[in-house]
Length: 120
Image (cartoon, rainbow, N blue to C red; front, side, top):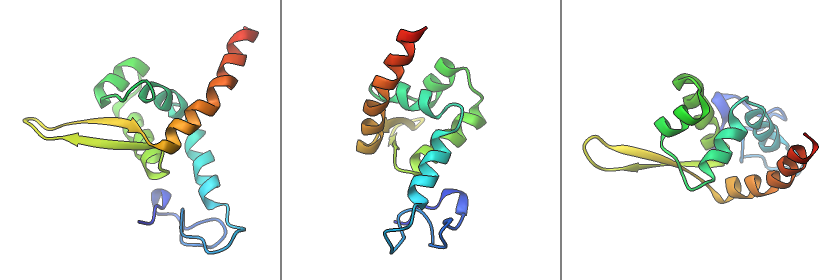
């Protein structure tokens, strides 16, 4: 499956994230940096990393609008950091979980965040 952020072609001329044929393509990295630069991306990753979260729980905990949260989650899903799991029922429910890449990213950010807390 090809993942292209917001339908954009890759910066190097490839077809987008995950489709480059050369070692010089940096589209995946560019898209990841773009998504992680969003205001709520890291707080969302951190909150979901505690064991998954429902949309409404994330919205309440982070005090973010539903449209901003939906956009952030969609982009995190597009770059492969978050998975949405739908549970059948009436009404159907869903939760968000970190992928292996999302867990690795969160693990690598922890020492950075701990260092920032110590300087305050």
